[in-house]
Length: 350
Image 1 (cartoon, rainbow, N blue to C red):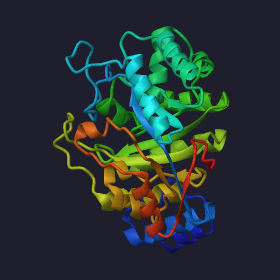
Image 2: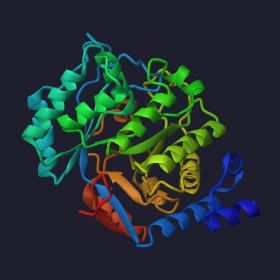
Image 3: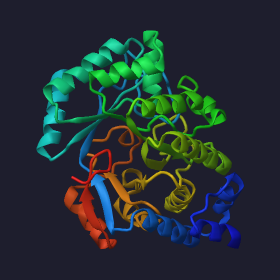
Image 4: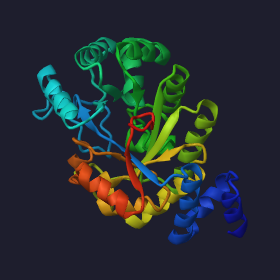
């Protein structure tokens, strides 16, 4: 333990075995080390956040992931595709609230090809050129490519030309195919997720990386996930942030599982900050953990509170509904000893 602690404090990189050992350490030791790294990377006492809105343009999906309570099959009475009028209303509300970005995601639609996505992105950019479109997860992009008979690179080039500005890290779950085959067998495998991200980075798009843990994965698979992200970041430098949250089982096909609690969340968060030495920003998941644990995350390696979440539907479908206004978020940041600062997706202060 002492040798690993010295490595961490001296800014040396941990290998897989060393990283795995961290799960046996006590929470306070991990929090202390993660906090030291956070201050080394971000010496100013600032915690950032963004004002944006999650817009799920459709819930129609063929993936049928066992962890998802949001998706509906085509033809279901609750299945939908948002009209342009509904989209316009959501975007205009976002702009009125000071929002600068929309996080645009849907399911793996059985009928849509690249043309529908080009039209959607083009319409948004044409009507709201000031809005940054952070959209379409790696599995969505892989699905669009397959549906359209295109390579991932050609698909991305066309989406960028239509108005896509950056890609969220959704659909990563755990980047281990043993887990993916059980949880989401119709979604792209881990190599394809990484290939979409690598291609996006090469084409100049910045992206985020995510991890949804606390279901059927092992500690070793959590570390394997982090190391795959770290390896790609070494190659491309294209990830701006890492966002992780515990699986919420209610209303899903895995509702017999117990949700991971705050202790497990903070422990995994601290380990992520220690292991992911080349990812500049780590977000706090107050959307699943609530404002107080979100605040505590700022002492366990997180330097960003993520989004105000003017709208959020996917986590809410599991019955977990935490909401926060900007005033409350700023209060929590200040109370933890930091200065709140608005940012954009590129982590530039605005």
